[in-house]
Image 1 (cartoon, helix red, strand yellow):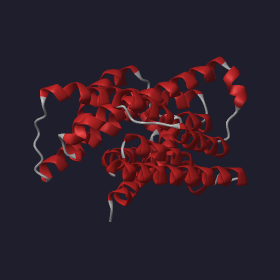
Image 2 (tube, rainbow, N blue to C red):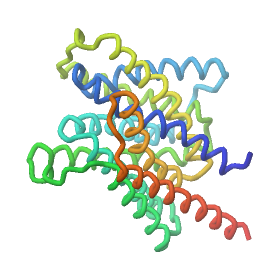
Image 3 (spheres, one colour):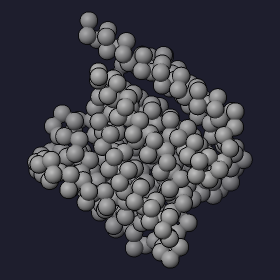
Length: 299
């Protein structure tokens, strides 16, 4: 199995579990605050990562010069990201929220070109744009929401989430040269905890409304969406590169729509299926483009 195939299989794990996590988060927001959801999720996930670190006998020490990168990835890329995303979902529906999150590859491409001198051309921009068009077909965006003050706050928050995730990707990239995936994810989770813990007491939570289903959603977010999702996304960024790995985030609305159909009985319309096909096409073109670029660079 070559590196590209391993990278593709790795990135499919976070795409699936994160796509489902949108539904879990929306369910939990009826009872818990956004930072409470994130705090419980990552306290549990950090404990699991610590156990995995000990089980695999990973060194616990990190270099002092890398603490700022872990702080950026954990504090901004995880804690602030989920603050913006969860709050945004409270103001706007899931469809326009998914559309904005799908802009992550565009921002990642720009940031990677600026900070890591990645070569970009018209084809790169065109393929990313094609993926965004696909997401527009997938989601059921309500353009009238743009003229509502409350929804405007939601859009601003979601764009803040996009920037926070780009920070996470950029801060994570240099760490692959010095640490294992387990070490990177453990310390990113650990550095995110103070941000969650400080804000949790200020939220109003209805624990009695959580129920068994709510506990199950929290378990899913902590184990699958956090531990497995972030571990395999870190592996995908290492194998595929930051920009190509981020392109697969466009699959999230596809997974969310499919899971919503199975879990809540929402029908999938032909236009959404067309959008999914366009997203698949854009990802395929990006993969072929990256393969050709690597081949040329090796010559």
